[in-house]
Image (spheres, each protein chain N blue to C red):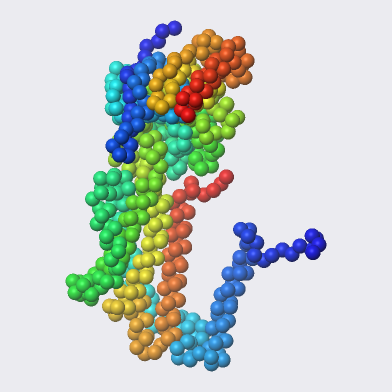
Length: 264
Length: 269
């Protein structure tokens, strides 16, 4: 199943200036592709620069060298074609759930009627139909992340970028959200790039795992979870019970541990 | 000491006082205050000319409003505070938000604004009188100078505290810079701006009284200075009470405005 690449990361490096004129190399010459309609997970220990890579895809950071290319065009700054969901809550507290989800469409000039309809569709998709008129402060953490996801999807991005989106949630909410993302990916055909340090989350969501090593962040391995046989299964329990799940998890653990030792 | 004989202390560490206890305590402290005042003036412990009895002060307050046109002084004072304060806000809100949003704008104005904050506004009174004479202008100018630099700094700081993720979310949704400032940063900081305005309005009242005492023939402060000349301590105390009551009313009005403008900040969970 060959699919064309929608995002190309070409020899990207990123150095941050330090005090005293020195530089910290956070990301060192990384190249990989994200295929259209796929879920690509950036995995690695802390300090591997995975969030920096994602932020460069979003255009929120500029690469020191190399380029991020989307649909043949080099990224230079943020744009609506690359929607982003953060770990921290980003709901606009002064707007209702409905208005939050309409926000991107409104600033991009989508007519009111179409806006309302699309917002309602995506609010239902993430299971918040009953809360369209609520304010974010009335919602739980998981529900607020659903609002952020619906808001980003309703804006019709080419790629959905997520930076540890469920890191602040408790375990059972996190499972529900992961299952929701599989359903969303199936129903909307959205390409997703998800940053995580949670092995389970990576294995469950990924069509492809990009494993990064730390200090500086380098591409260590590209891993396709072959045991899922190219399928997406929106039931965490079933995935965990499949043959090959444990093997892959053990392999990723080994990689994580090696990297942890390097860092010490 | 047996354990079932444990006494409950009146001072419980970090333990919230009940509604009734708070009400009784609040009324109690004021009852003590007026009680001491009444006893001190009725037993002749204090000179009645310097400290008139509270009932006399309240009677005078009523008389000032009912028979002696004090209301027009009060209205003039209110209009000075509100007028100067609105002018200060008209400059401080946009400037503070711009300075908090764009470091380049901060780099221009911050060195200027922070220097002015250390110049006490009343020190400008002599020069303001020479520039503007004795009309409304010097009073408005004093109030304006007194609050604007603090207001700008407060609003700038609050604007800087708007979370970076909100700005970045707007950018990745396709917002341009003016949209980010108008549709995300400004509404995010607005509740804090209203709080800053509430604090600064209290300061505006302080400068008003200074301005009216030093150089005015109208307003609450001027009435108090006239009363001093005729040894009318009851009228001076009436003026103080009215200023206090107005300050409280404006504060309550701002609190109500805050609740009305920002229903989403009410905790329902």
